[in-house]
Image (cartoon, one colour):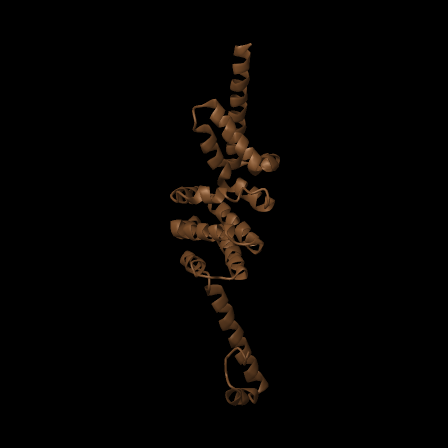
Length: 230
């Protein structure tokens, strides 16, 4: 405790001579102050945004902040997520982009970023806020990397299925839709699709149904073309 108080030896010496009871009171007060400081470090959404926007944070500090943020996003009322808002999401996306340009030490940071975004997308307030950030889903989609299966699966669960469905179903040309679907499958979705289907519920179940329904319809249309030729 004395070392942490940044006192020189001359000032430490009188404190060492305090009676035992007084030392105990000092220690209790010191622990209380430090506990309160630890609690207040991340209280408001703006605290997280400010912290994440600091340059050159270490991997450990980023990961610790994101873990706390995920818990806050999960346990706080919707008004807290609303206050976190687009600025908060943008700070997460900036951190996620940082992970893409760094080495494997950042894999755990990337994973926690995705889990934070997943917590945001778990309610209508978060979904609305997420879609106000135009770059959100494209940045998240970059985590669909088969070399990082845990990140890829979490990203696919979070919001990438919605993005992929929007991309695949947009073109009018059958061949282009088949090509897009094939490219997504080839770049990592094939390895994840069964796990995504298992236990799917809510919004993810809807997106999986959309994906499967359109895939089946395109397959039928493709086969019908060959039947017409015959």
